[in-house]
Image 1 (tube, helix red, strand yellow):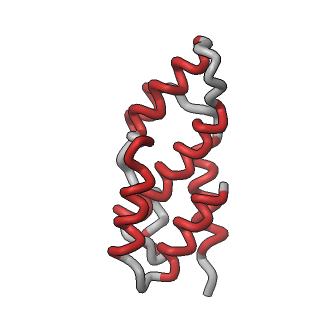
Image 2 (tube, helix red, strand yellow):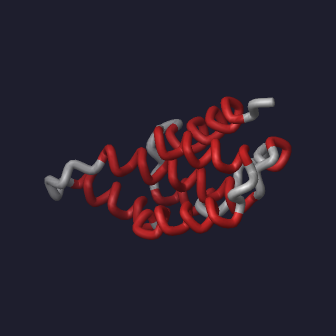
Amino acid sequence: MRVLPAFVILIVASACACAPGVEELESAEDKPLSDSASLGIPDDASTVASRLVSCTHFAGEFNGDQSERDKEVAVVMAELRCDTIESEAAAIRRKYSGNTAVMEALDSANEL
């Protein structure tokens, strides 16, 4: 059974619905997606996958022009701890190397 499409939809909907500000981010920063457990994805893996999607999204919004928007994006990326997301994703991959759902979720999060 492939549960990945449903998980990816949940991640994208939660991470990219409308470029959240810092206030919205703080309320969801370290929370896993609610349906991830039913998809066979542990909370810690769900949280990292969700952050990975968000970090990738905001990295694409960063222009490097020192604009006000760049400053807002930098704040959100700092709140998400995007500077450590790759190492955290690697640790989750090691921890759940036998869990296909986790591997697929992280692969999809990387591709978004």
